[in-house]
Length: 279
Image (cartoon, rainbow, N blue to C red):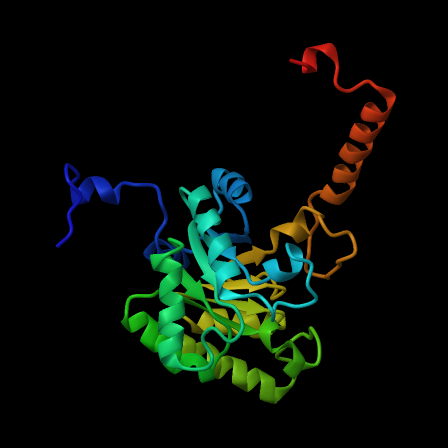
């Protein structure tokens, strides 16, 4: 058994780094938890410093970092690269890698091989994958081999073409039944938490009350166990993106333009560099 030289198990237990077990326990303790996405070292470092519980290296990076129209073309290599950067910046928060489209759906053996890279190569503490009851066998196998899994049901962006757009889920009886059954299925398969995206608040509340694992909502109302947001959305990096559930805390896009304009002005006027800024 591995035992770090000069360190006792009791001393290791006192470290401040959150674990998957801590995330699960927050529900039992009635503590709301806070998750945000992060895609780079410095964003992760700063969000970690203020005490977020979890950082998700979302496949949304394909849209908010690379400027693509959907999440679908993100590669495993890109996701692992960004996950490793976030892991280096997070000393406290749990870091979860979001598995890209077709890196886990084709076979269970491929899902295990790819998910394992997030832990072995990138240093993440687990993975997130989309899908409900149809993904239960895959989730079960990942958990069996020691890979923690966060589920994701409701609006699953990798299935955007099936839905015909970004639409609120759980409105019709058939959809509601599927989501209720899927929530139970992913819990039974071993997920430590489940993201509920764009689900009617009453249904999200029902699912949350039914499950023993935490529900992390995005556009799913206030009754979930925690909330997750895309960091780019709440800092206002894309002024063109608007969603009802997004609360914008800053307009970073305007600030970047302001800085750019100031630098342009200083250079063209000869004000920069000054004597103090020259070797």
